Length: 93
Ligand SMILES: [Zn+2]
Image (cartoon, rainbow, N blue to C red; front, side, top):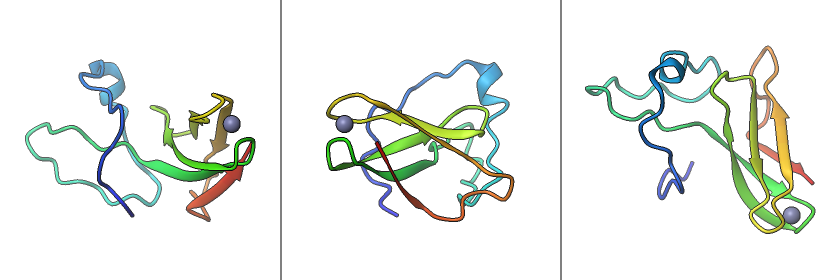
């Protein structure tokens, strides 16, 4: 996976969200490095509405990936199933 250049990574999340930030899916657990920011897992996705590619990020509750098309801003949500993601790439739109 390309882990460079995380765009618009929010900083200073509220502690009540950070405490629940647990990944039960397939992303490798980053080393607990003195409270460093945890990279948010994302999903590569094709936005069919604009035939473009982008990323959507997992929500704080780890129930789904969600984001918006970078061109038209349409909302995309991908539920996370009980067994985690079977595929690492989705299309939507
Ligand atoms: Zn679009």
